Length: 192
Image (cartoon, rainbow, N blue to C red; front, side, top):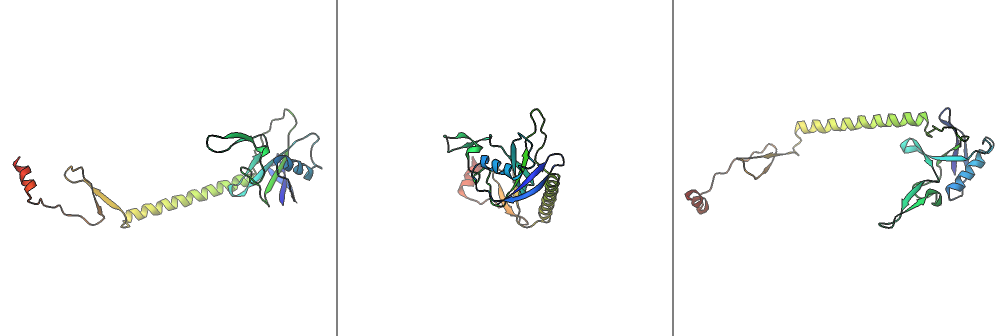
């Protein structure tokens, strides 16, 4: 079952929603089926264009049967037209319950500026972005606060006496410098 919606270009929204069972396997079959759903409003000689609604991304993605994608394994990749691939495979991944936008092509020479998006989707995407930015800022502020309070998980790196060696000590614990042991090696080093 798919939900077919007719695109209103002027108002940037979808109308005339129809639920229908589609059993085809290719984009061409889907376009033909979409045409039959709205045959009563189709302009004479117009071609059908379709898009899939990606709800979690708040956008509509045009399904262009002439688009070529790269398929194959390492070294043996080839370009394949999207129209030859099954609808249930990537990149279309058509599943039961998907919403399909249907619009008819404009007459020859007319400029098409329609991007398939609705004002509601654009607004929802912006609200989602603002929410995620606020969450990210809150999380960063919390991390900064924890670092300032000293959560005991940090380490300090100290350089001593221009030594190339680094000492890593847990925060709050300072190691006292060790006195040189009187060994034969240090005595020999001082004599030379």
